[in-house]
Picture 1 (cartoon, rainbow, N blue to C red):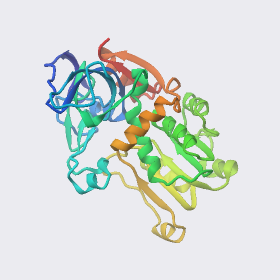
Picture 2: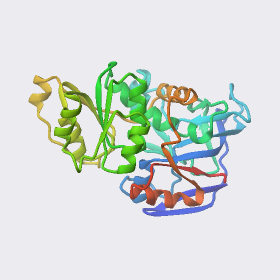
Picture 3: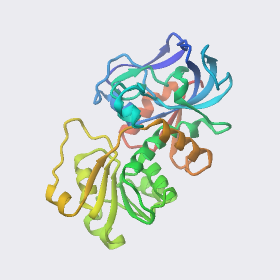
Picture 4: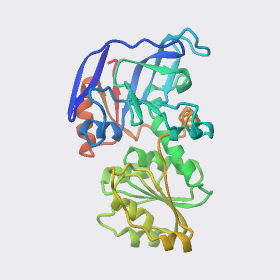
Length: 341
């Protein structure tokens, strides 16, 4: 089969690999669409430690072509979305329903304790517990189930109450998914802080109530002028300075969600007195669970998420390196790879 392999930092090779064979409890899926994630870019650039060579890609959907001998409920020709996070189902976190915090987590092409070959390839093997039927949903839409599942996991952490005011810092693909999910989940007013003109326009298209450029307008002034106090701030960039900015925008009782992936070893300063006296919270979120993945598929099936505004660039497998470079330049939004073109 054809696959894209990271052979070293900033090096992608497109070539033939041996086609995997499914175990008795697995499916072999022909990958029809795979989204490009910032995690993939970090693996490509070397800023996220991985063992080269490896096949990345963890936001995927495709068609079942082989069914393991002991598999029930699936057959050849089924169209499925793939959850790349494979929990052990034995540790304390898994038993409590927090499979994303599994102590022995494996990811298909993503970031985890163990990484198996991912979906920037014509075929991938998947445990049956890691797929969801998608019916006639477009594959590129179904490929967004994984990042949307991560967004659902994040929004679950902040205990959103209907009518609350939320600021989203950063309007990349994840920020735009969060905007839509927040509105679907009952947020009253959603503001977006984003310096790129096209991304601010996209935020308005998918439901943001207000947008502003933090390089032109001071968030500490513009946000109170627009909405008064903020209940929730979500940082979707992954930088210490934007985490501080997000947290500074919340008032008493406010919650700050760290969604963007900051550099390892990065630190921020907080006032523990403010956390105590004003009952403010800072919470993190990581990955997704089988439950949030299934909920993401349901939202996509019911057209609750605008995918067309998010997907700006599509490539064959040979275009993966160009997709990485565009993302590093913040050119466009979501990139989709079609390995079988």
